[in-house]
Image (cartoon, one colour):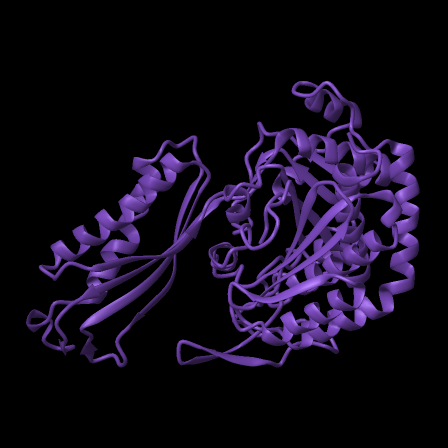
Length: 458
């Protein structure tokens, strides 16, 4: 999922003083972790990383080579559960089907949730890596290649690495760590499944939450945004009904492909003519299936759509517009009413503005201005979506979701010289640099946790 590169490219990298002003507008205290504290903690994080990286790299490559689709992450979950038990965590498996919850108590203090996702995508990998996936899995009766082309394998490695780092410095923090390995992020269903299975009732409800996503930005860079960071997402399926006939006798048919054609073009008026032009909204038809051969008019056509928006009003306008346009397209062809199904959806991820500003200050103090981009709430979020928003909406508002770059500068320069775009998330060529990416994720999540649960935290 790709969120924030357009803002970084536009120069939205603010100074530490600007961030401090943003934080000061709503809080009277400075960031609780001083620069000196952060630098000392960072040195300890880096030492732990250097010691543990060979094992983390081996785990990353294993998971990359053996990806699993949504709610099929049994092997992956077992690997993570075993790792966390070995570290001393109290581990519960099969939460929300294949999810993992790992708790570590270190005296009184806040409960801090650290989340990773586990699932991969139904697509063929084309990176040419020596550990590239050749796995195939079945979904709904169809067999697909499977690829970690969104980078969740990187996420899992820095998730385990963050646990290792925090346990190596138990004297620096207090409270309870709640490490959550979530299934089915790619189908926007895993977070809800875990919540429905009692994530915040069977286990401690978090006081703070942190997550992060790898992207195609410069390796080791970290983006921290206030407010809305991602779009709301709704997946819609539409089935148009018709009457089949010979291709040479269209008058004897009710053509569902004609209905689909009217709909595909007409639904875009929801974006261009019905929503506020100043507000973000997208309707994309990503799949259409109808018929079998050229000379048969089929009796149905199936479409799959993704809808994206930031605010609830626009989200409703777009969803209503899809249903209304589908009915109109069917009416034009004297067809039965179409079936319009809301398959799943999730709201925007919203970062707490004050906590985001504090986190940016801490990270800039430890890692330097050149590595950390701070993006204020006044700027729009990214167009992709994340069901981490379900955790926030369920009562975890003190939360920040980070964006971390994974492409080496020389790779970016190479693609630029060739006039080609750098492969991004969901590309079959997406291949973040493992070591630098995993290290940046560990640094970010560990320092964020110390910020709220450190022994000097206010």
